[in-house]
Structures are given as structure tokens and as C-alpha cells.
Image 1 (cartoon, each protein chain N blue to C red):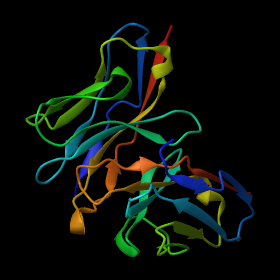
Image 2 (image 1 turned 90 degrees about the vertical axis):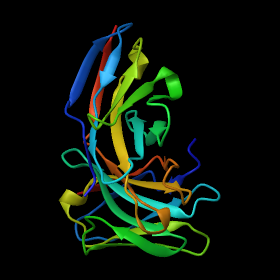
Image 3 (image 1 turned 60 degrees about the vertical axis):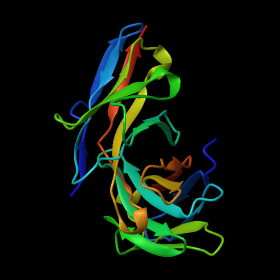
Image 4 (image 1 turned 135 degrees about the vertical axis):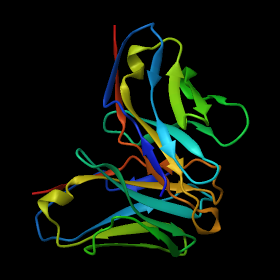
Length: 113
Length: 116
């Protein structure tokens, strides 16, 4: 158990819908990262938050947004969903040092039908 | 921009034989390098990291990795492979962002298949 909790584990929704993925980081970790894993794209970095503030943005679509709350949990919102958004979405957390590893949650498998 | 390359999509090895999963990197400054493993339908698990010091780094489950600065490589190794080592392996480099909060940049992953 990595200590990072993601809910839900699985999500099936229709095109055009909006979903929210939730992540609770490990106790004491201030940084939260979101990654998308699809078969043909590997692990793509989406966005990073540190102590409530956005710190880095990757190839995140405008239809996607995220936030980190005062209790440090984070949510990734995906809207106007398309078939191509079907993927595994991972959250990771880490302490604020470059020499520390990030710990990953089990992921949310999103299927858009 | 920092990047990581894993030149092999798949590595096949017989159980009991040594295994190597290759990784090369491109960074400016000192690299912070990591290996992760992903089993089917699971999240990524941290295996080991190189920050500084000894070029041979030991990690979980008997894995080790050799850092080679001149070749900009960080290959993952294990002296004797197990069938249970079969999984997807990712090499990653930590990008130095603001306030030491850099994200991990991953390679494309290498599937390790260990046959009995």
C-alpha cells in the first residue's frame, strides 16, 4: 500500500459527460501529480499541485482541470468527455525534495462509451 | 528539456538468467533517476533511485541499477530473474521545478517477460 488513495477505481461514462477523480496523498506529502496512462501514449504528465497551488502543467487538455484543497486532497475534473479520454489516471504524491520518490495510487480506470 | 528513453519495448529472459532493462536520459545538471514497476491493473511501485554517490544502486526485490554518467544511462539489472518479475518497468527522471517540486518524466516503459 503506497498510502495514496484514489477513488473511484473504475468509472464508465458516456461521451459528453463530466467526471471527477479524487486523490488523497500520503500523510505529509504536499505535492500531488496527475498522470494519464493510455496504451499508445505511455505515462503522460498532466498537472502538479504543491500545497494548494498549481506548480506545473503538462499536456493537459482545456476540458480538464484540477485543484488541490486545503486538506491537500486533489480532484481532477474531466468534462465533455470523448472516447479518446479512456485511460488509466494516476495520482502521485511526494515530499518537497528532488531526491524523494513519488508514490502512486492504484489509479482510476476511465472508460468513455 | 529533460527526457528519458527506454529503447526496448520488450525484454524476454529465461528464469534464473540475469536481466537488464535499458534506460538513457538527457538532463541539464545533475540527474535524479528512478525506476518503477507496474504489475497488471496496479499502480506504479517504486523500485530504486539514484541521487548521488555510488554508481550501483540497490533496490527492492533484488533489483539494482547502474548509473553511468559518460553514457548517460541508468540500466536496471537483476542477477537472477524470476517469473514473478514479469511486469512493465518505467525509468524516470525528476525535473527540477520551482521550489524543488519537480515532476517525474517517464520513459515509454519496457515489458519484461520472464519465461519458466
